[in-house]
Image (cartoon, rainbow, N blue to C red; front, side, top):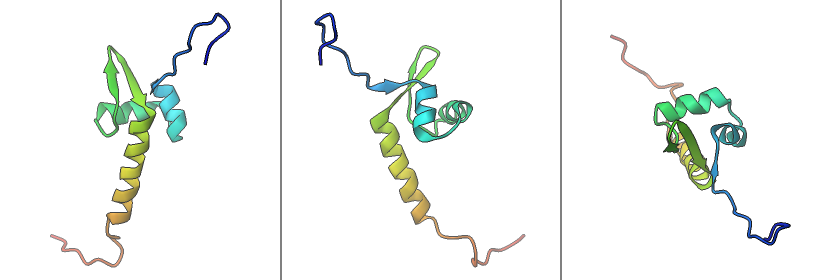
Length: 81
């Protein structure tokens, strides 16, 4: 797509932490903390953290699969020491 000056516009492939937090429906501070703990995929760019939509979508799918695979702790007998 061309902009008004006849130059091709560039489609962004990354999001800022604020944009990624809004995309995931979580707080800005939580996404930064998750990135700090390496719990979510991100790209370090100096002091900034950038997030790719495709990587976040894949990460969410993996989280869903993990949640479905976990056995319920209710009704499971556990040994107490």
